[in-house]
Length: 198
Length: 198
Image 1 (cartoon, each protein chain N blue to C red):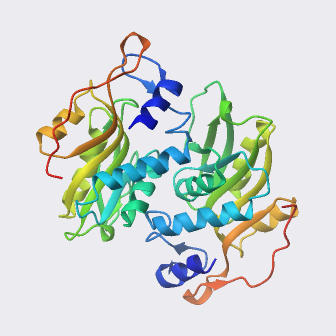
Image 2 (image 1 turned 90 degrees about the vertical axis):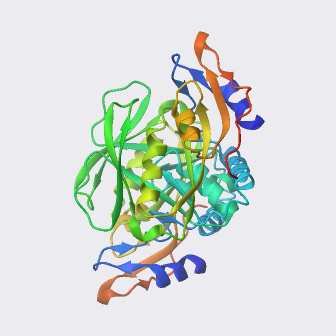
């Protein structure tokens, strides 16, 4: 998605070979027009996938997810993240390890919001090692619902979350795929990703 | 706002005299069409206030805030919430006590995102005792920016946050004002709120 790639080039700051700071438009300050356009793009790509619910995780996933849900005309649900969760009935839960923060979180969604009749689109801002994506898929599976695919704003293609997910047959659609952050520079992936079952 | 009030009546669950559960459309599952319409309503009300930034707090404020920002055509910034924050440079910070969770959080925004030239609209999902609103106003004041007003989805008018803010001359615009949750029933406030300086 050119609009997004241009933003990354213009405003993204490469902090290290693995860390790209995009807090001016994606995960602290947010560009609402960009969010809207990304939501339209996700909705267009998954238009024929029979999506009934969009699922994301707080906080940075919420804006792109609500825009995708708006254009798909379905509800959006965001998973909550807690360091330790007091036991509660009626929750789908999964553990997600954050390599960035080096801590394990429990993520959860009220089970009344996803049923076996649902076809879910998962949205998140970043895909690196895939921990959050696998955690969200786990929640959807616990509800016996179907995962139609995963929409990602920025995929770090040099980490293996995307590869692992695609090898499992998951349709991962990333609006920007960064192949390298070496030499203080953002390089985008050029290879075609084979589409899976959309 | 009738659309919102109807949703509250149809789907809201009164858990006690002070707690209204609206997790089917506002703060866990979210109705994207309602979010869009609320964003338009905030944008219309504050259209002539010279807003340059919309500020909210994670997580439930993000969706209404991004929609308001979209229609005001300005960036949105969400404050982060942490139980204890490691000292970091370049942050505006304030302490916010949550009566619901009985814990104090530190909220923060990177100071590069708000300057003295900004006129800020604060958006949040609930207004009860006003702790979050006062915390967000504190962040804006630290940046020497102006608070144009506060847009709230649901105000609990039987708690005194709204009264305190309005007494300080803050323009608080709530899309739904609940005057009572007594007898397991949602009652909306009928009185006119005097507009302040819009």
